[in-house]
Image 1: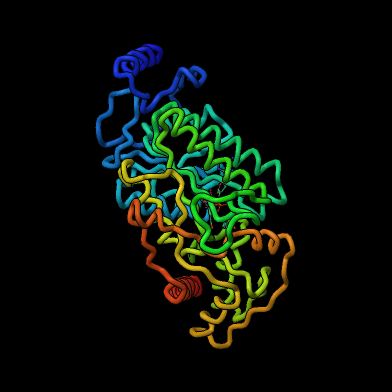
Image 2: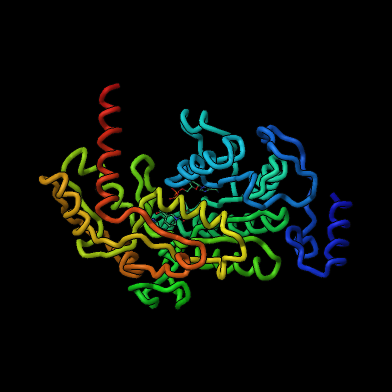
Length: 376
Ligand SMILES: NC(=O)C1=CN([C@@H]2O[C@H](COP(=O)(O)OP(=O)(O)OC[C@H]3O[C@@H](n4cnc5c(N)ncnc54)[C@H](O)[C@@H]3O)[C@@H](O)[C@H]2O)C=CC1
Ligand SMILES: CC(=O)[C@H](N)C(=O)O
């Protein structure tokens, strides 16, 4: 390892360019790694250099926090593209039988730097998708945990990614804006003074990632996701969760009690669009990325307009309201719609699902999986 570091330093000095991967002069010396049972099926290409291969052809991807609402779907998409064994899901929870058998899975606590480093080194990881987080609603009830996971954990991820020359994707959120941000067509660059620990930690992540990019050459990429809606994975404790739960209620009981006011408009996106955007920005040539943090947008709706759209397919469906003041205050401080023109211009972002398409797709997925469950 020391020899590799010396060679790397020499190479950097010789070319006079910023190192693309290691920044050992700024990061404490990497302790020796030990071989553990964390090693997973081998990369199909050959890699002998100290730096990982971050180009798009044969990445080895690690997804942290992969058992939440988004990680399993992303792993499925990335495995279709890069091969089943080249995408490793990780989390601190135990995977379901199906997830465990669908591809590589390891335990990874993002607060354990040594464990993370071992996984990255032993599995020759070149891309890191950092999904571990404590979301807005849960975060307000557990500020200390949110601080640890969303801030300390993020520091570990950025340090590991910088040490090993990884391309790193960290999602941000509409929650990174606050009451003093413009609320309609919120631009990429504007005042960001969020009032949740979740939002504060995500602004921190955006700024730290961009700082590491400028300072150390880290290949940091970040999208600000709207509220994400999915049929076969449950939301993890956010303010936008109602927009997932409402579909299950429409199919199962025909009524729903909403914890946000009927007129609360928020930006939302169907999961397939969100995951495709993530893959697209990960694969985008660096030269196309004028920025490292982009808004993405698909649709905006209120509980009332969503209810009306669902009623077109389920005419007896009814929504009642029992507003949670904490969640309402959060929602009222978030954008109603994002301006994502830079993402559309720079790397060709285009959503496929609008509100009618979202409702049709969600209702049909949930109806089919309910029928299947009843057949067993
Ligand atoms: N789902 C959504 O609507 C949106 C999600 N995002 C972001 O996308 C990412 C993924 O979101 P979701 O899948 O919805 O989140 P989630 O809350 O469903 O899942 C987060 C995962 O992180 C894991 N985790 C918690 N502490 C950990 C630790 N110490 N080490 C490793 N893993 C740990 C949890 O076990 C959980 O499986 C998050 O960063 C979130 O902020 C951003 C905007 C919208
Ligand atoms: C929009 C998000 O980041 C998330 N779904 C939340 O509501 O906390």
